[in-house]
Image 1 (tube, helix red, strand yellow):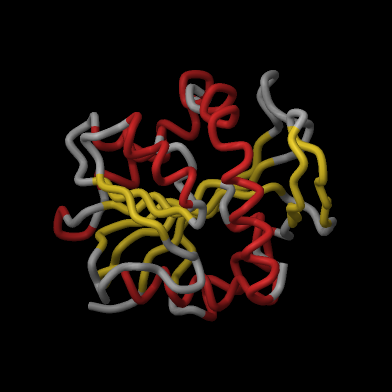
Image 2 (cartoon, rainbow, N blue to C red):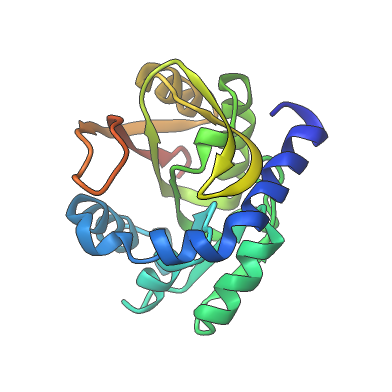
Length: 215
């Protein structure tokens, strides 16, 4: 998915599956206790009580979960269809269309960022640029929570829930992700791995919590 063409394929694919994605995935936090706990910890540690960004927000369910707990949450997604759907379903939160590689946010705008399974659409070579953008939009000492499928394979999907798509899913080695975060100016605070929940695909998941360098 390198280059403009790859980002366009990804955007069109998520536009295509947006409604069904919301129906199938929009309630996922109900059976993900670890994700809820990590998101709550992230929000509690948001630097200076600043807004928290949900990067790759999809239909906005994580953004809305944060907003419902008093967090000033901002969801950002590459897919215009997903952003329109998120705004419709969750009018109490803020949503923006944007790319992980060029975030639509000011320097130091956020106190924390969550990227739950959105970096799986980046190649290993693109991680450094994306984490550099995360660092740019974070205040000093702001936290980043990154979750991804661990491994080294790339899965090309052309049929998704009966829809024709063209999207790559990149699995990432935990050391590669941690190294890219460190290279972008983060300090790794915690890293954990878990088995899939019964409702999930049979892949192992990794969570990395990192702190932006600075005063």
